[in-house]
Image (tube, rainbow, N blue to C red; front, side, top):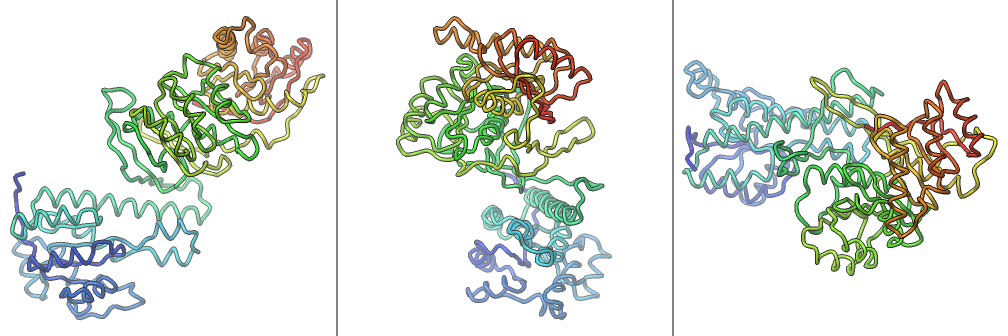
Length: 532
């Protein structure tokens, strides 16, 4: 690779919190004849390793003070970083004030994000806000024409390689690349501080929103092949696709990430200690089958039976450890991704025979009750909202019909409404005995969603060699209220015996009367679950 505008490195300043690789890097710089300035623990570690180091306090002639708050905020440091070496006035100022050039800055910041993540108190978090570090990083990055800045230990090798190949010089290409990375780092650092401070003040939606993420993967393409895409992780650390370990299979695609997240968030609604084994099968971010059962394999079979056509090429999410019996069932058809808290060795061996099948293990389930934020981009803006963390299992349900649901119907109603929460609106979900038997998703008309779900239930029955639609004797959930009785009557015609919906329509009385006339039991949740 050709390198242009080479600048010699004769002096480096090193001040790092993360000391991984520090000694080897310092020794390599010293071997190239580069003078090293350093501070505090960095200087101590280098000196103890036999690397010749000049303390910044000795270099500036000004002592470190105020518990280390003031040590590098000095003209001899920032003048050495910001001076334009080819500007005569800058050169004269350096000479007049005894300021030497600093050609390489190595700084990583106080671990503010980690301190917050540990639940530290307010004072500890404040003390872990770095001041001098960002100032040096920004100064060096602004003067990229002459100064190189390292903010990530993973760049040590890249910089050393170029220094060795060029006789102790850095190229403009390298310096620009490092400068861009440096500003991204200080931007993310400030974003973390800003978000934390807003939270301390109880500001859910501060005047200025700052988002930051760390790129994890450049994707082959986006939602479609003509779109570019990448995956970034944030600091939330919510268990899921972003934190999972990929055991095998091809790289995840954009659609894989999106669908796998949807699948795992849905299956996490079913606590294995309460609901038992559960399986959710997702296609295009919509569930095509969800079930609980006494065994995981049976839960998978029941979820798969709901829509055997749509399940092909789908995403499978499990709420407990994948076992061999379930793995044997899954590999019978083409599946894109399996995500589960864990997998036993026998299951892993079975999945390994399908080399392209992606297996993700998370080590646990996300808490469906945990607060969080969802961000959607618009033209020239963002929409921010709370995560929909309301649980159908907890609120009191209002029986509004003459007939109350049976115990089994009530259990299925809660299950159905939980699934409906994860179906694109308008959503209609038929459930029987802890398994979906028909799902209608994403229609502009609630009646159409109901008809589609009913048709799916008939198709599922026919695939199983039965003639009566599985919606017969089921319960049905609607993610929002029925504005007219026609949607409810369509469900009754399909064979549903009980209904769960939010209620709240101006025509609730008409809908309730229609339910009573049809002999349906109906409950209101008082809670809507639109999903777009």
